[in-house]
Image 1 (cartoon, one colour):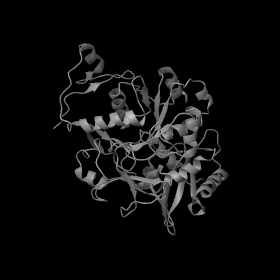
Image 2 (cartoon, one colour):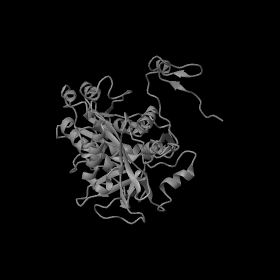
Image 3 (cartoon, helix red, strand yellow):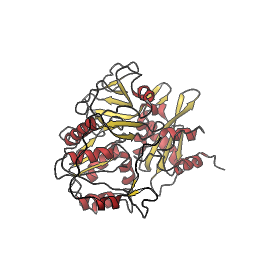
Image 4 (cartoon, helix red, strand yellow):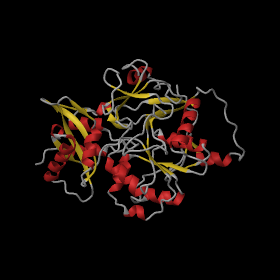
Length: 433
């Protein structure tokens, strides 16, 4: 039996409520200007169900509760991005992604302003985001590395047209950075003076496992270290902590207030995904390292790991090498079966406008990866594609690319922003006549 009592529709682009639906504007017009009394609820009362991005499979509906989520996010936004009354916070995000609730709760709890925008950040031009910073006086701007890589190709003239002096904090999340894009953001947008608060958590975390603070020392691409109150570690396949420079699984050893209370309607999947590998320890599914100076870095999802001749590396390392070439806008690296090596690397590359996808360029890019990572990681194939499949939160879905490349069932595609990207990959893989 359905538990939905009413559907409220906010009219957009000429579409409004129909049938039994309720119109938002009509409801607001009929309301009194007097503040509504808040409902008194238990701290563990369900707040919302948020869905994960779907990069590793069917999106998971994770349950968050009132007390833990509100308290943790309020503290996190206050201390990690230094939000204060009078600030204007804008995170470039689909509100269905966890960063939507993060920015709304964090800004309003601090007495500051949250700027919400419905639409593409590159429409009607690639300077739309910089124009919004100037027009609305944005002081704290959150973005994804994917968006910055896409904006780099538009050049810096688009930035220079706008006054970005209101900005005092830059922040990012979603996937690992490559150094060139990170430093471009720091230099061209931040004027080489603004900190980049590169944080990482997840929809199911309801907060961040890793994050620096504005007063922290930083290195390019770092996430600083454990976020406030988070007992995180990096472990090997046996669950033993690894040393500096060693890649391992990111785990959390103690609970935190905003953690999901479970996957809606599927308690076994919750236990299987996060808890059964190391009993009593949350395994998040990210590869991480900590350098000799104590700075932490992420290297992508552990399920995306490439294993070439017994050597493991994350796709982000291959993609970072490719990004160093001026012809590359963005890329995705996957592992495909190989009879001798176990896996070999295929790279799917989106070129910058005007670049000719010639065979000589493919050879050059293969050698770029080998020069950065060693000859054993020389990709066996570079495929030029018009776009990469991404979720609505701009994460590249490598499992789908691999499925298309191997002519396998790609599984759940509900989180993809544009299914047409898969056809572009199929055409690119077709033998040339």
